Amino acid sequence: MTGAATGAFSELLVRGMRALRRSAAWWGFGIVVFAVVNAAFWPSLEGSEALDSFDDMADLLEAFGAQNLATPSGYLDGQMYALMLPLLLSGMAIAGLTAITSGDEGAGRLELLHALPVSRRAVWIGRWAAAMVVLFAVAAITAVVMVAFLPVFSLDEVGASRIIGATFGGALLAAFHASVAYAVGAFGGSRGTSAGIAVLVLVVGYVMSFLIPIADRLAGVRAWSPWHWAIGEQPVTDGVDAGRLALLAIVTAAVVWLGTAAVERRDIRSA
Image (cartoon, rainbow, N blue to C red; front, side, top):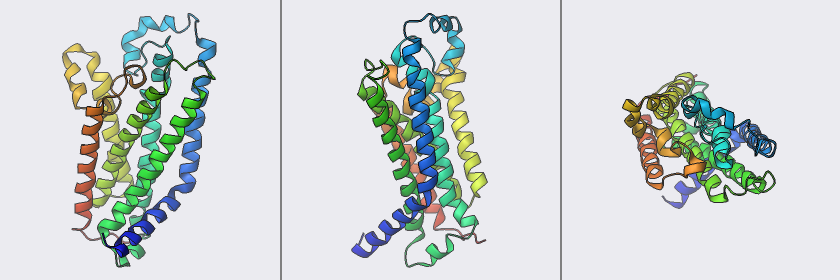
């Protein structure tokens, strides 16, 4: 990039982040509060027989990544990291990215940007990058807050590295789902269509990773799920796998590349 091109892209990035700042603040606040509240219940449950009673429902709990609930790491997986945090981060990323790409295009708000002496590729990549910065900023804040509260809620045996890894895995999964929405919008899909297809991919991936493998004969299906690549079965208990995270990052980059290539080859919708 030339200096002028770099400056233009930086401006596009900042504009995208500004467009998301209010919704991101509320999403981030809600996610952090959700995480802290769930962690705060652990001291009252630690050592009680209430969590042990769930052992009889092992197969059902496996569908929600909620195994070994009587251990600190298993509790965090079941309450947050194996399902709810990835869902919340994905919801935030999908909603934000579709709002500033296909949503803004459908409302006519991208026409001015497309009229500027910058390529469509730069406009759309700038919007995608803005959503990613916001997503990983919220994830980083969540991880920092959780690590800070581990000793407060008697969860310090879990370890900061497991929390950071599980949070990053959930954020990368959210980035993948948001990128699917980005690609659909880049091909010309409306905001509703883009979000809908991304949510469909999210649900199918979850079913492949957690529900179908309950049947032992179909356990191999899990290996094809983005959920499995990002967080495995219990990201806090088992840790995340760097190789699978790299695979998900590559697939996400390929989805973004396809979408970006498509937006330069079609007519832009106007309000």
